[in-house]
Amino acid sequence: MIIQPKTRGFICTTAHPEGCAAQVQRQIEYVKAQQPVAGIKNALVIGASTGYGLASRIVSAFGAGANTIGVYFDRPSEGGRTATAGWYNSAAFEQAAQDAGLKSFSIVGDAFSDEIKAKTLDLIRTELGQVDLVVYSVASPRRTHPKTGETFTSVLKPIGETFSNKTVNFHNGEVTSVTIEPATEDEISQTVAVMGGEDWQMWIDALQEAGLLAPQAVTVAYNYIGPEVTHAVYREGTIGRAKLDLEKTGKSLNNQLGATGGRAYVSVNKALVTQASAAIPVVPLYISLLYKVMKEKNIHEGCIEQMYRLFSERLYAPQGTSTDESGLIRIDDWEMREDVQEEVSKLWSIVSTENLAEISDIASYRREFFQLFGFESEGIDYEADTNPEVSIPNLR
Image (cartoon, helix red, strand yellow):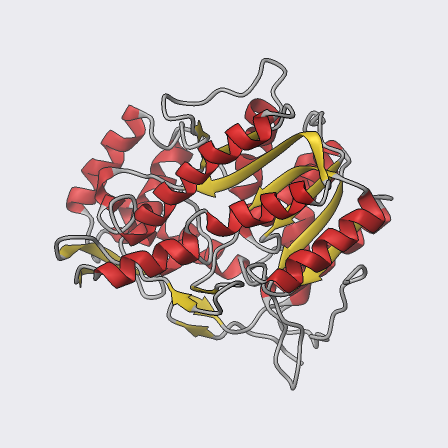
């Protein structure tokens, strides 16, 4: 079939297998061109098929030579529909890892469930013995609690007051104003239940109780703080409340793992084009302006560059891991530089539909959005007949 992008809001409902594979290979080649990362033998990446989770798995495998297990919730091609981008990404990763002589396995299912946790533990026990790195990178709109059976749904809303600010439709470049009503207490608590730290804690508890965590294991989860312009819908909104819970969990896990020499961290990462960030009002416009400024200063990074720097210069740095006063790893340090934020703020104050193309990098935002789904990748013939049915070599 001829596979073309079909969008619905901030989601692309189709994905291109060859384009996804090309994007994965580009990330692999970047990592292989860098200095090796020391310290990882067996990695478990929960939420491994896209964005920071996929990049973490690539750095672990091709930067450190680690065996990996990826857990993710994606679907294969069926009934004339393409598979999800995460399925194609993972198929490409698994094939590359196999070709490189690395052990790699995929488990597809609901990471929140006891069933998938048990299946993962059995696989670790059988194939790896123990894991010394656990990356928690789950982004989901809903969660069914494995003990109570209750289903929670997250929302992207401010807390306390109605929020209004600029946003952009990145498909047509129209800058408009968005107004979002504040969340209810129930919506806040549900968002925390989905995106907070409880499931991360459950994973580490299960691994530790089963004796599958190496004595000096490292675990890391990902967060975003961002500038003041995004705070109402992120840091001070429902997502931010959930991330505060994640940070609290990180401190608790650090104490828990410290007894055997282990460590737990929350890494605050840079704003990037991801399926999750595309859904947040205000953020796509901010990212478009940020890209413009950071590229001009030659300090722009994508997911793979961020994760390589996180692993090589922070998590496994020879001099030890540096954190801020709250115990957070700040790999968003270049984004939050004063000179960067000053310029972004100036552009934010004047950006409009008329000048968007001139003063922002909306073109890169749009291109990277489609690249998430395997489109607009260099060297791919998108008019060619393509088989959407792709198998994952080590699917368990």
